[in-house]
Length: 611
Image 1 (tube, rainbow, N blue to C red):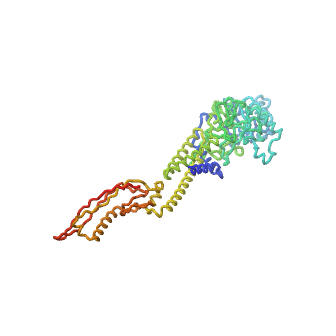
Image 2: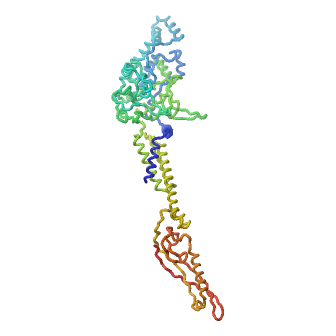
Image 3: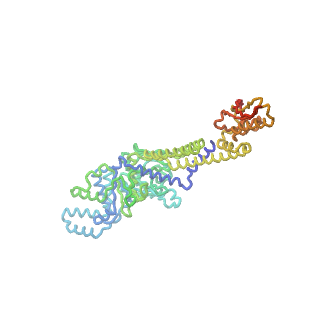
């Protein structure tokens, strides 16, 4: 069993090393297939609404707000309406890293302002003029935005952390200087989570954050970093990231929003060796500090032309509809969106216009909006439906144990039986691992299948080589002593070979000639010998077979051919006992003339123990 075990270890080691990462690439393909197969809305999927600023909305609202970027007072109006409609949390997947320095005003806006100024003596016109002037004043627009955010206390802003250790090794100047780093930490202080750095992959040395007044007015700031795999597909995210090697971490936008919805402040987000704890929800971490995203919201469809299309499970609402509803409410008219559309909902605001959209590759589509990733993470934290993967050592031990099992099966069974057994085992394991994904467990499929196949093929080749060597040895040892038929039988079943022979009890029957003394007395010696020889030859031809040649090197009694003691390792079927009937015809003569006589000769039975 040593050689099969060695083969199992070598096959498992080859799978673990995975030269060229080919197995890992195929494993990810099976993971994407499982994502698409098990994608189902969770109970919290309907609680998430995405407000998107589309290209069409920008063109439609350009006469009112000018070209993009819009005045930040526009977002203040949207926050007022969402807050009044009962939204639980509002997260901007848009960076407001600087204050607005200038605001472009088109000719139409200037003409409207001039027209309003001519009638400024009317109170209503004067109020509208004042509002329009504030809208085009960058400082007032920012102030209004910050004020509405502070009043709401349910608004969250986005930040981006960058310059990892690998980037720093290439260019140390990419890191923020001490003053900039201090300002970044001050801006993010309200969202800091007490946690010691354990994973160097989650450490960054620079960041783009909201301007300080907006960050302090917001309820929290979360990073929107994404973590693609080597094939560019985003399957993981970083729940907590560090700015340098400090003792505080900064959560992702989706994580801090979900914690707020659950009533967990940032300082109460717990950390452990292999998980992040948000209330009753636990986020299992991979060895590099990232976590797998359990994609819930989306399906892939194909139209008649064969084009692949991604359909999200999350509800999309146009930003234009929200702004129009806000205007209708101020005018005392029924809004286009029914009242209560955003009640108890979590809102993510993003821009999907050309040049503004953040498209990422996911298991569902290579051009998935980045906000979908945040929505799925938010959904996972609220529902507690994260994916778990066994520890690296546990996974390797599991694959090795399966390989050893297959090696034992291959060593103890015939090739056909072993192949069927291994195929059934592999099919059961693949089905089990596929099914467990729906229960939140990610177990390897390709690695297990390859380890089992390589182990079994290696054991079969080892057995074939050993059998060929044994046949060669047997041919060399017994080829000069055994008949070809006996040698082939021995090669088919070498385990039955015994150099000392087999001890069996056999029965040998031989005939005796009974003739009348008168007839016998008249025979000459040559005639008697000829008669006896023909009698023995008849019995010998009926019983002699090549398989009964003696294989013993010891001297054997001088029995007639076909009745010698047999020491062949092969017992021919039906040879437990044989009976021979021999008929002889004797021709005798009397004085009164020749006559024919035919008598049946009785046979004598002799039992001889075979050694």
